[in-house]
Length: 564
Image 1: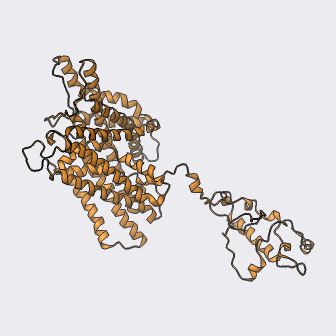
Image 2: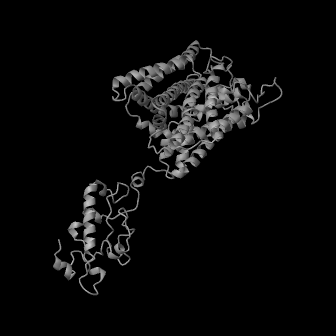
Image 3: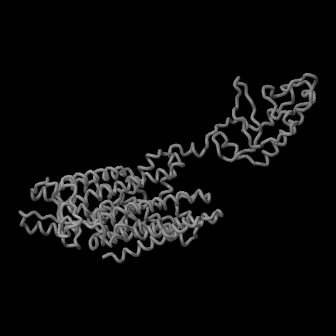
């Protein structure tokens, strides 16, 4: 501590530093802001300027992380000591003494962390800098996730709804799904919640029952997705094996007739087997007849070891295949439509093979499939959290939905409007309308098989995590648990592939139920509850619209059971 003689002689232990608090400011009665920080640590001349003392802040900024670990009581004592020395600085040692010669705070009193330079960059931003992505990447990620197996069903669904009605439903469902997804991303900001996904906000706002209901809806979506993926893998693999067998064993010529399609009047048969006319071998007939029963079990042998792994990170590298498959499928549909003749429709002559309905009372088929085709609500918060510009989340989500709807519209319209034979021949998987020896269809099936085969383990992994979290939340899953779940899941998938391989019906039932919970009910109810918690009234028109959305969800779900 400095002595009285040191004070009178103006000798200070830190002569290069200016006073912490000037006596003029004290005389003017100015209040000291404890948390204030000087904007610059150095003057223009390069001389060091001490910043005013401030309480250790929380871990908000880079360069201040060490501050937050100190006890606030110690900081308060240090500040009071500063005030004591500052008052002593009012003692003059003589006439004409300048401010720079007044009492200075000794070095040993100044906390060591006081000299840490401050960098005004948020620590959260710096920590996540590598995880942030541009709006373009965010839009593309949402588009890629939504481009699922529903693409193959849309021409069939468009026929069941009628051309005009189906297109209107696509626009309406896109608007409803975007509106409720926008509600989901706004709710955490409304009630100041830091949640991983919307189900966490549902638990906080609507209670445990609503939370369990949301988990069940998510499980139904995953189970339905696993079944549809298995049916499609069996379908694609069967057609690929048929193609190879016809080319190698039967010397079948690869089809180059781009206008050739097939129609199977047996509605209970999903896979079309093309047995060449010049083949009279009974062995060939046995091979083709047994193939559809063997492939699902063959697939089980191939897939069982893969889905038993606790991690499926390797298959995430194949996500780019999904984008390539969708782009190729779009070009495939456009090329086929061009070869067929782009306008094979007739609206007045009911006897024409090109007769096209504008409206059909079975339009709920289209709405049910679109529910799953536009379903991203259970992961939309995670997808947008990594967006670099959070203020653009609503815009980016809207652009993504617009691009998704445009892709659906193009593929469905190309196939449906250009289909050269009776529209009733359209399959719920329109690739089944092409022969196995169609080279372009073969390439499409190969791409889609690789995509679905790489995505299926990821789907099973997500399903396993949610099931185990729901049934045994405090226990990690053992290999016995994983084995049991895989056996049950594979048994269900193989049964559907053998006895009910109709992906359109599976998708619309699973999609309509999941949409009833996750799209049409929980977002409006959570929004109403959040508004009440904030004490903000909801306009009458908006309130009516929210309840109308819930009613639409119930009607859409129950309408699936009365489809002819």
